[in-house]
Image (cartoon, rainbow, N blue to C red; front, side, top):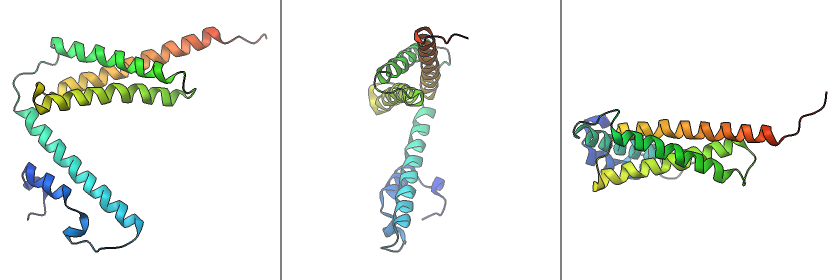
Length: 161
């Protein structure tokens, strides 16, 4: 077997990622940090294999315009979902970072799930669609945060000088 993972095929990368580290020459038993390192190493291998497979599938696709009609849809739906996620987190927590994380996580997880479904056969997966999802998420979270700041400033009493 080659020492260079990129010299392997996609199926071999996935198969190698699923092999327990102990079966690849590492010693059995050991400190917890060694076990955690091995688990991380397996996870990284699996992630690289998935990204490799996704990149080859995206390369084989036909023309995908950066400014097509579907890109506007990806942008606007992601912005709406990000704002909705931020608003849903507002009654639960006062921490702005958590609200931003929930909004961004909600929108991005649905955008990624849509691209995974496309890759599974229900459409045409596209890195450009995902790019517009990320941009829409950023705009949606920023807009929700600015609205939150404006609402908070309007309801907070000012101190007399």
